[in-house]
Image (cartoon, rainbow, N blue to C red; front, side, top):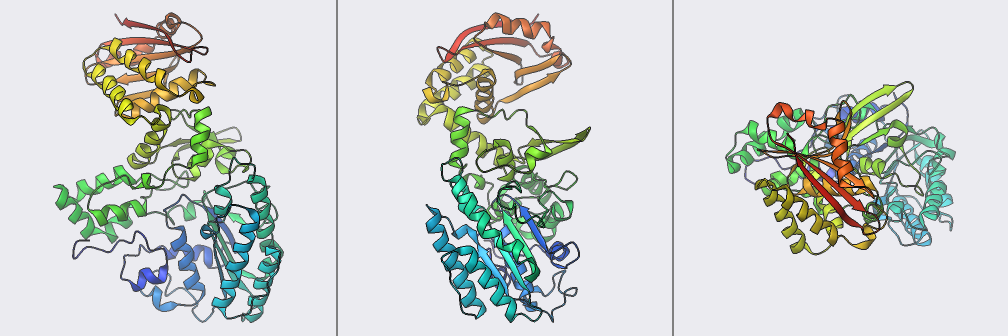
Length: 524
């Protein structure tokens, strides 16, 4: 950190340590007051991706309800809050409750509850059943409170389950969480405030089936900028850091800020909300004085990678209904939903047809897109990085040399190298999706499922000098692929550019699991 710059926290998630340590705190307390002020309700749930400040928000609320006014000096909430009132706080960080079995999880829960009793100065009445122990803690702390109520803050409620999705243990862990959290509905009258955060939003018939009074604010505008930094917040809170980074890179502060936006901005948590910047990635950039792919430090969940082995995701066209975006069952994974909830995708557009809302999704920024595509391409290409690099070089060189035959031959070599378990159950769209991912990750200007007035083009590739239209067929012929391009006038899209247009038809064989035919036609 350069002397004179703001101190951007990248590994501090405790409000008290952050404020006492002199770190920059982007003031979110006005939004927290909307929740904690007993105007909109008392029980809330918000799902957000990792590394967006959920734990810091929980810690801030803990200090607020415990009445630690000195920590809030100069913040928006300080003159608005009634500091004469305090409540006992039960703070459960489920991020530390990962376990191999439900029995182990129950032991961890009881230990966490015991620690909360020690912190609050009361005896712990244990039970072999964690939900009973949880009830005891709420009842005993409420009895010590001036108004007979407590505050319950649960961070990363879903972490004990996430590591077991798509495993035989998923249902067992789901039922355990459901039983544990059901206490919150039973003892609702003894809670001044309840706030739950997590990454995933499971359906209400799942973990929160008994907690039907819990308000889900995940997609509500009022909290859309609670997690992450708006453009204005970054400019106001980190001017010296922006200037110092720019000076090192030889850019003006405005140019540097625009680069920050390109790398780390773009997350929208409501259809009408302004975008926000990833706070941890921004902090890492200021700390190291360079732009980097900090998102990749946390790899894509293994179960998602396994899912994409069987069903490659078409990242060129992402559209879901509100129901799909909202939630899912742990036993029935919806990959696009989970990619949204884990921060790989964000809201691009929202529209209503009849009574159905549809959301268009996109990668939020360059950092996340690069991370996702690199992970996927590594999955498809396999472990031989040197071999995949050679094939990628052949693809790029062929396009630069304006040699479509060499371009197709490089891809033929690539598909021949894909492991058997990635090609045994593919369909036409799967091959197309794999081609799209590989082209994008090596920096090619590629479009997928490009709409025209007569249909959708499978793939388009555009260089500074040429345009290519690619149609993919499975267990058919390359000739039919070319005929489809011509019959539907797909070339009309590129005619205004004046660039030479090449048509490429590629046929894949299910039996041979590779390219079975190619036809290349120069457009007249």
